[in-house]
Length: 149
Image 1 (tube, rainbow, N blue to C red):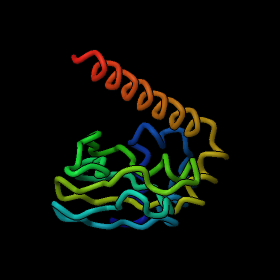
Image 2: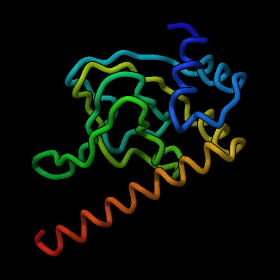
Image 3: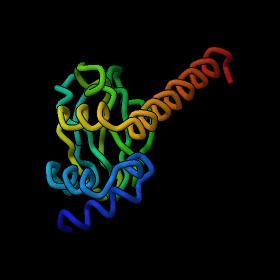
Image 4: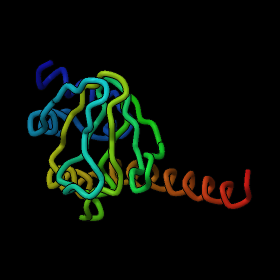
């Protein structure tokens, strides 16, 4: 896929729908595409948060591997993003991410992602809503776990 095709793919994703054509082309040009096989690790907990990844194709699982056995936190698929929390917080990775279905991922450098979010209110709103959804889901999961349900 070339820059124009990647820009078209990005435009179809809700998180990037508010960007204009030139912004999408620049994003595609300044990012890299990587292919991953099933079982490969994208990143591990405590690594530097230097980039976010957009799933162009494939599936990933987010794992909490602090205990004796990894615990599945979430599954992600095409059109979703991983790694943004560490970049936004300027903190190390809080979880491990493993590929569960052959994947093509767009790697956006952290500084580029932060610049993009800060200059585009539509994207910033999408990120806020997405993070709010994650927080609400986590809160519900914790409440259910505490109640034994």
